[in-house]
Image (tube, rainbow, N blue to C red; front, side, top):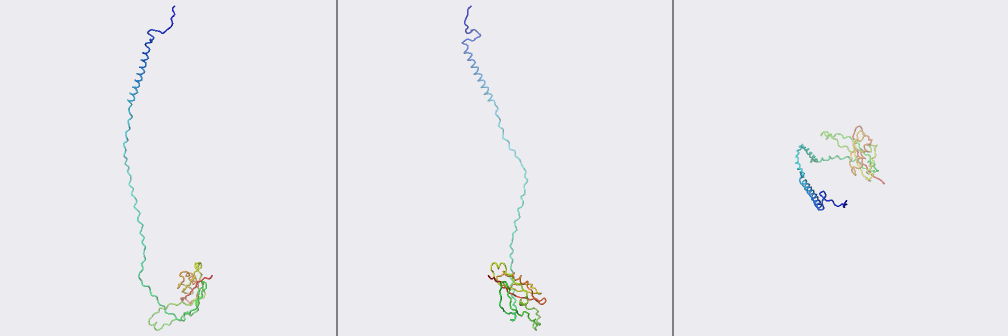
Length: 238
């Protein structure tokens, strides 16, 4: 029996050495062709993609709103014009002073004036009761019944009880001194009116004099009206 070394099989079932290169070339060609086909398919698919349509711009919608017109309020009225009323002075002639008849010399007796601190100075007693005037022939003929104005009487006799005027606080604080001459009208034993005849300085001591003279107690016959005059000196001592 002949033993043979196994070698490469030869026959139709096994490729020969010359047929292997052809098989490998064919496989390579097949792979390349497959890749080419796949690439062509991918390119075809990519070219066939439908582009996304761009949305059309929205058409603006016009809306109409009916707004009720508001009537503005009327403007405020202008402020009233304030007119200054100027008081017109009429050209009226000043009244002429009525001349008083001269008093008899015996009714005015001069005497020294005493001036203590806020003490009323008194004149010396004088005859103040004038004799009743008898109707003379001339008065009876003319029918003139107007009596002459009463002259100031002596206040020391008419008003024995008197009150001293006080020094005003303003005068004390500012060291003001002065003098006041006042005329009092007495009726029924009471001072019913006080008139300032002269005041220096004006208005400082007037109220103090009025307040003091209204407290006087006077002696008058019945309802007779008597006018008295008195001077006051206001001084200050250290």
